[in-house]
Image (tube, rainbow, N blue to C red; front, side, top):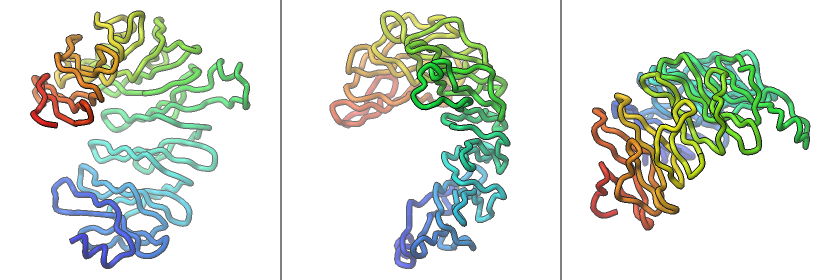
Length: 327
């Protein structure tokens, strides 16, 4: 009875349900600047300056970001991590129940995984990803200082990728969208090498080919290389290890998704300006939509494909190129 919680406490924030549906939890404000966590009406024993980002882990434990004495840490079922930081944010929950997040200590930024933070900190830390086995982390980081307004130093490159706390040798103007291979052995990311020149680096080695723009890369499920949406002459297409994979050219293409068995590849595409749809193995659906199409989702056996679409202000679900009735 959440109404009873609200009657008892100063404020009750967004509730979370456990995977088994047996518990509900929410951050509660007992009084001004005094937080706790309520689970099925029972409070965690400690009080905090802030309790936030609640979510249940796959193993059923309850996670929360906590601030106490102006320091941030993690609480799991009320037990706090030993590690404390000036700030902690962007937690990513792993299938095995592990927790990875970004942390800040002084002016240095790093990653922490299950209460263990990287020893080395960096001037800035942006995108990060965790390997499928939950044991490795990679993040884009500023590795060298760039004096204010020093455009020459900027174009020499000061950004790189840090994997398991150790940076790649390469320096780039910018780097984004890192991802691990399915076996957790390799890492890929998009790197910018000039004003309008982009390519993909895999384990620090760049493709020879350069492109006008790239979106998020992804490894093939079978481990057979990297696929990325690329802007080429004539429009956007999919590229595999630097070479065109699809023949089609689109006004826009991104959010590629492999089927569970890796045999099919779908992406969100714009075959014409202002019209969106899904292309499967380079064949667009007949139906197009004016507002947007969200990333496609496969059925568990990989035989069916669905996506959310917006057309003329109405949301709909499209399954195998057939929209549901209404909107």
